Amino acid sequence: QLQLVESGGGLVQAGDSLRLSCTASGRTFAHYPMAWFRQAPGKEREFVASINWNGGFTVYADFVEGRFDISRDNAKKSVYLQMNNLQPEDTAVYYCAAEYILSPRRDYAPRTSEAYNTWGQGTQVTVSS
Image (tube, rainbow, N blue to C red):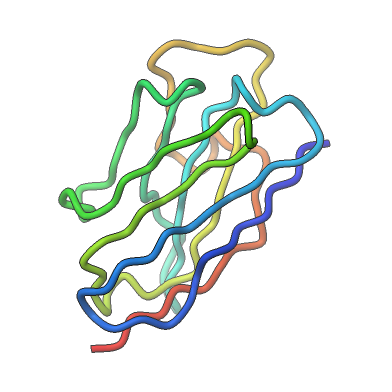
């Protein structure tokens, strides 16, 4: 059973940076595509960024506009989301997600929530203006 735990959220001011971390335990982590999603109050969960099994392929939501960077360290069973120039509209609970697949797939990092079958509990990010 794969479990994901997010950390690194907090309260920051507009223009600040945060680095979210997601650490996995349990099953083999190395060949899973991973993603970050977020959900703001009263809104649906939305895709933020995803990364393939070895970090060589990444996908970003349009609203990221070069401000965020997703990365992973398979030796540490962790995936990260570096967020720069945060804005109040980035306020949300950020979730880490993994897709359990049997073997690594090149250039595969889905952006739809339905692709992912394991989720963390989320970490709150609040950006004040």
